[in-house]
Structures are given as structure tokens and as C-alpha cells.
Length: 220
Image 1 (spheres, rainbow, N blue to C red):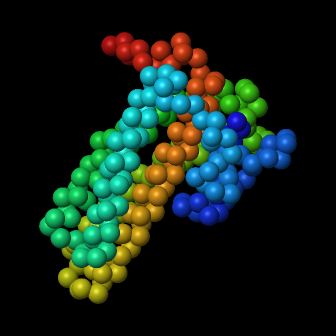
Image 2 (image 1 turned 180 degrees about the horizontal axis):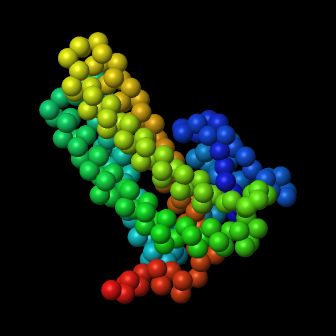
């Protein structure tokens, strides 16, 4: 399974794909269908993964439930606008981002990504750039983009609620919903890539002992 930095033109986050490998094949993270990457059928099962990776997947599962609820809420907002009943749902989603999604991303960046990036470079699974890059750069870049897009969505929803002009409020609210849908789809695809590619590569290249050290408490 090969993983390098990618950009995909028809990706929900509108990236261009660039893949350089000796055999000229497709990267599992730059596929014709983003949700059916080559090699994803060989993804390591949850049961075989180290507890560190299983914990990350458990957190993903909780995120997906929140995304499902938020998508339903967006459909309601598109139909009826922001009502008192939907304000609580919006607040819940942004609280989830702050308390669950973004801390989860930082955990990946601190514990798993640096070592996996090193191992991918050592194994030759990287671009031919100088210096070489791996798919970890994409994952971290998406983490940053989610932060930025979440801020945009939050501000647009807040602005829509303060505009006195109905026509302007409708336009801004429509933009808020559109950006929120991009955020949801981006997060879904990101989770898919991590669970079907990144975590399987981590299982392959990071030893159980190294995962154990990730779990060890930090000395005071």
C-alpha cells in the first residue's frame, strides 16, 4: 500500500492530485472514487489494531454520529431557517468540534503522525520532491483546513442571526449551510482515509512497543 501527498481536483475540498511512484500506479489516496481507493479492501480490521489505533477509531465513530445529526440539522435549516430548536443543535456541533474533533486531531499529530511519516519516508512511500513528503502532510493540512472552515461556518451562522434584512439574512444563511456541508463531507472523507489507509499503514510500520510508549503517561 503506497501513500504520498495528494491533491484531488474533484475532492470535496477541491484539491489537485499529484502522485509520483516508480510503477506509475494510483495512490490509494488519489483514486478515481475517493471512497473506493485501491487497496482499501486490504485495510487492517479493528480487532487486529493496537489499542492506540482502536481508540482513535472509537473517537471517529462518535464523530460520525455527530456528523449525521448535524447533516439532519442542516436539512432542517435549509427548510425552515434557524429556529430555537435548531440553535441548540448548532451549538452542540461546534462544541463537539472544540471538545472532541480538534483534540482528536492534535492527538494524531502528536503521537502517530510523526513516527509514521518517518517510517513512510524510510520505506520509500513518498514523493520524489526534495525534501520528500508523504500523505501525512495532507492529513495535517486537512486538520488545519477544518479549523479554518469551522471558523467560517461559525461566523456565517452568527452573522445571519444578526442581519435585520430578510434577503441578506437568507443569502448569508445559505452560504453558512453550503460551507457547513463542505465541512461535513470533508470530515467524512478524512475519517475514511485515516481508517482505510493511514491506520493500516501505522499498523504496518509502527511496532506494538512503540504504540505502548504512546500510551505511557508523561512524567511530571
